[in-house]
Length: 354
Image (cartoon, rainbow, N blue to C red; front, side, top):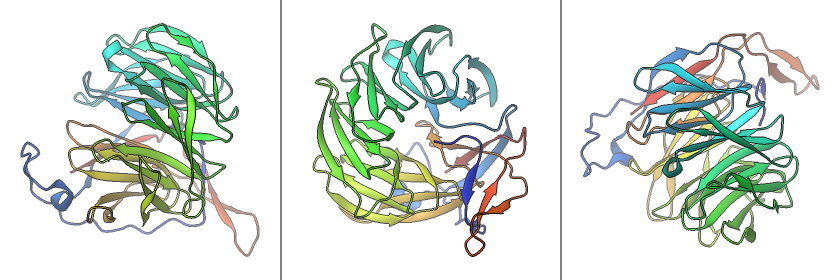
């Protein structure tokens, strides 16, 4: 997952917002998927390098963890300001949260390590070695293990979250991108270069299923799960989202999404799925019937805003982007690509609200 720049053949024009629906977030009887509409409610400047990757919300402590070059910024969701950092996380990509153990784990892509810290105090507890280029990372509550996707080694590194010890790596046979767990001992991981989705037994540490997505999906990236209905949402670089049955691997539906999808997310309360895309769009996906879905809304964000996190309490969505400098055309004259440089010190936290 690249940090500084991104490529796109063109920028999409701005899309109009749908009207904001009036609703009560405290009303459990409301049909969210039908009534919710989203809009940008805030944009906030963050200082420092225009390098970032994954974000994740620690709802209990009201923190948003923002991976930011060689550190993790800790953003207070209520105060709306940076209140701390996890330093010395070279080339950090993601953060996993083990709330019951009061621990967080960062995947440090440049030095092949995971940094462990306390969620309550933000103090560093220790570190663990991984294989090459750790990227996606997730905590599995069923096994009390953290799993780190190593992009260059084509493997997963399991870490005992209680003892902070790494276990033997699990070979995957391809480049892993993102990971998700079902809380019942299954881990799902996309293989970006093989167009596959794998299922891993988090207790036995073995690959149990390997599903071919190549008929519909090119370069699967983002991955999220609806735990109740056991549905997986896979964002693909050919501008498609796949909805899979997590138990069988069957593709239930295929939906058009924006260009450069790098993350998907699912909100269990609103029953909506999302794809954040580097073309500056956020797709809002809802159920159409028992096995079919539809794009209910496309929110215009900012070019480059391709990763996101959802606050499960407020249902707000957080994305990162930076302002673009003048684009230069490279490649063949007939089909040039625009390689866009980002303006220094323009990192922006975008809040999208229902």
